Image (tube, rainbow, N blue to C red; front, side, top):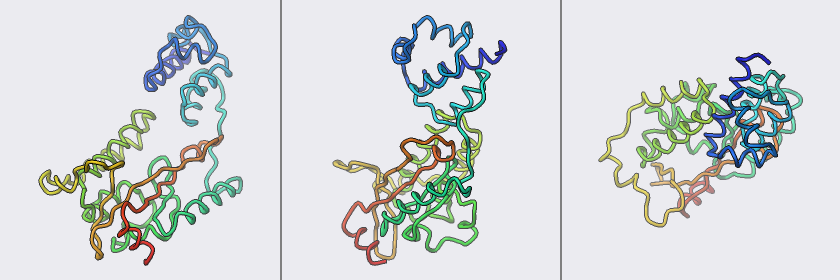
Length: 264
């Protein structure tokens, strides 16, 4: 390992420990090393073994893509492959995604990659996309861009200001963890979309007392529809592609919305 690699690994280790808000002594204890040795790893005075890199990354819950970066920085080959989703080895993964999406019907559910590009969706997602221009629905279809685009879902969102803030905060957290330049570019594009006037949805955007989540509230020809969402990920991924897949499901927050979706 070169001096440069040693210091780069130490920088990454310190960055992740800071991001996860784990004190040095706590991480050292969890990884079964001395605090002195961990300090030397962070400053580049000690060289980590491959097993040590993986152990520290595991305790810090570092995503697989970034674990590969830590290994490379320490002078080792990556441990985790990145298989295209349409590859033959991913048949089981694609099947699992389809089962989750189908099981969510008649409620909308969609699968996205790490950049929020649509991977798959169930038929109920039409509740969100109906009436949108065809060019917005062509691949690559970015879920966040469609949600805030003035020609997409944006004008239908009653609590547009609140929902916009919610999406931007989620994306910002993702950027702070990964530093992904494509996510930074996505955020820059989203910030160019017009922000709703504060007084326009001040009441609609307010979280009501007793609410347990931020609701997506939509205009429709049947009146207001209200949804809350859940996010599902693979529990034990060993492939970067699988690690970065997620399924967002939208469930009715009231009886009126549930009935609307059942009758579609």
